Every structure is written in structure tokens, then in C-alpha cells.
Length: 370
Ligand SMILES: [Zn+2]
Ligand SMILES: [Zn+2]
Image 1: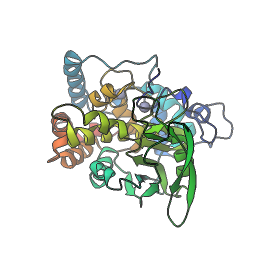
Image 2: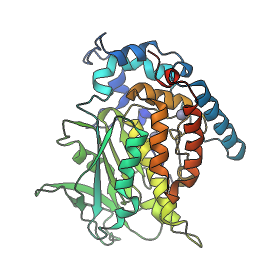
Image 3: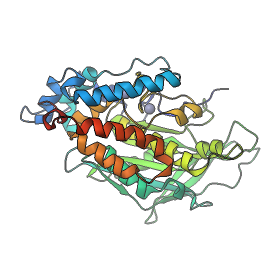
Image 4: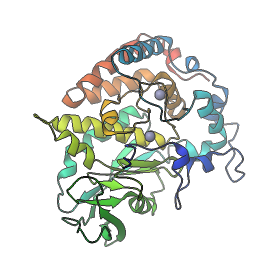
């Protein structure tokens, strides 16, 4: 029996009927793509960037590499699942051509978080604490703003029947709007609990996307599936369409096991990591193969829980070039966001070391090279 990858699979598998897949949209041979004006400074920087050292301070790179080495000495590297990764040069090569569509602008810089709530358990998503998530994401992604929307509600049957494996249910999106959403009986385990089709949720998110939205992300505690070949799917991002859907049912179920159960802090950490990972796909980040990075692909729940919250220096350089920020300010804001949060005590130690390394760098080295 197959088990779905916990996070997005390689990009080639992401394309689907109503969503623009990354491969098609980022192809340099696509004549419909807008061209970049030579006056755009971000475009110039992306075109001329050849190495991480042009973007990040040397001290910070050294600290990140030392942290990665420490982690790889104590943990097995993440598997690559046959993916080739995406170098900084590859990431930059397509960007100037795609800049108007694929880099945020002041008019289009809001990450919309759309809670999707099971009507039977309306308080379940409070474990995620979307106020904290908003503060964290705004620190992690400088220049971006996060807006949490009024929840959508979904009717989830109390229990799927043994005789009817597939059925339809209703997603209520406010102001009387409703979508019909596919559901099915779960295929693994004895509980026959209902699962929701994530493709229909993605279609609902794509309808009437706000003009100032950079991306729109559905977050839920639902058990999701994508197609008949999977047992479940934690979530999916369609980077070129800048939409993602996440359901954290399996995290809660797994972390609720054991004596004592690992509990809410571990659940929150796992949810925030996966949410951030999927949002980075909306900036056209592909999976990383460096072995110790938030953008590593993961293929099961254990790997999701083991994933770090931080980026390797190559992925950090991609983010720095995309959003044009000062890394010293970013680490200061991240440290502030995570201070006093028990779920992120271990992550905070890593970030403080990086913050201190960035602080010791000269100001001129903490800005992306021009
Ligand atoms: Zn992914
Ligand atoms: Zn990376």
C-alpha cells in the first residue's frame, strides 16, 4: 500500500487540470511570459548573482555550514527521493524573465491564510495559533504581510459508511457561498474516518483571489487525500499558481500517541515547519538536497517531525534575493518571534547563533550584492 509523501512531491508531479504547474509556467520558451524591464534593480541582481558569497555575509555562511555539519553528525541526512535539487544559479536564471509574475511587489505582498474548519470540531485549529504563525511568517519572510481570513466551514460526516467509499460534502465559504467537495472513506487503519479531497479545496482557494494576494494557503486539521493512489496527503503547494492546501490530521494523530504523548508544542512546531515549507514553494523554491534544510523533501511523518525550521545558506540566499532584505534585521525579528515559545526552544538556539554571526558582519555585507 502506498503512503503519500507528507509534503509536495517533485515539481513534475504537481501540475494538474485547473492549476498552472511550475514546469510549464517557468519554461523559458513560454512566449506569453512578461519580460523584465532593465530598470528593475531586483532583476539586475538576480541576473548577476553567481554564488551565495555574493549575497550573504561570510561569517553567517560559516555559522550555517557549521550548524549543518553538527546536525549531519547526529542525524541521517534527508533522502532526496531522486530529486536533483535547485542550485542558486538555476533559481536565478529564470527569475528575471518571470519577475513581474513571480516576485512579490508592494501591491501584491500578502500571504492569505484561510482556516478551513471541521464543523464538528470548530476549535481544533486553535492548536496552531494563527496569531503566532502570522508573526513568525512576517519575520521569516521580510517585506511580506500575513492576513488571517474568516474561517471556512466544512461539513465532515461523523463517520464514513462501509458501503459507500466516495461521496460529496459541502464547503461553506461565507456570504452563503458553497462548494461541493469530494470526500471518501479512509483507506488505511480501521477507523473508516472521512477524508477530504484537497484538489477541490485548492479550486475553492483559487476562486476570486484578492488582487493584493501573493499566495493563498488553506490550513486545516482535516485528513486530506489527493487521488486514489494515496493513503493520505498532508498538503500540496502549486507554486506557479501560488496556492497551497494543508491538513494536519495525521500530525495530531501521530503526536497524540505514546506515553506521554508528545503534545501540542511538538504539533505546533511540525505544523509551522510544513506551512512555511509549502509557502516557500509559492516563491518557486524547489526541494533542496543539501541534507539539513527546511526545503528538503520529506516522505513520511517521521521526516516531517525531524525537519529543521531553518534554511541552508543556498536557500537563504534565494530568499534574500527574492525579498531583498537585510539578514541582520531578519534574524533579529525571528529571534523576537520565537522567544518565549516553548515549541521552538531548540530552533531559537540555532537562530540566535545565526543572528549573532550576522550582527558581527559589516552592514555592507548583509545586503544582497548589486
Ligand atoms: Zn515540498
Ligand atoms: Zn536548502
